[in-house]
Image (tube, rainbow, N blue to C red; front, side, top):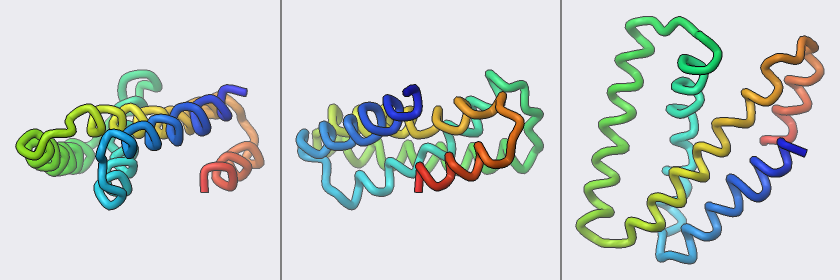
Length: 116
């Protein structure tokens, strides 16, 4: 049920709301994949993952790219759509965390099939 809420209502729901707020589909496709940034951050904060220097550098570069997109949207307006896309990405990033405590590989495979 949590997976359905995060994926259906969370990720896709906020994505469609963002697109109704004049978010172009191409920009939405790029922003929804920022979930990788948030997945790493959630793993560091809530799962006590130990990041490496490479992880920090990657997060810094990805965050700089996200900041460039934000500045571009700020000049063109439609910040509300940008915010909804970031919320959608956060919901997508939360999906793997819901199955982290399950021990079986079958659960990870089912999640992978559900997400993609």
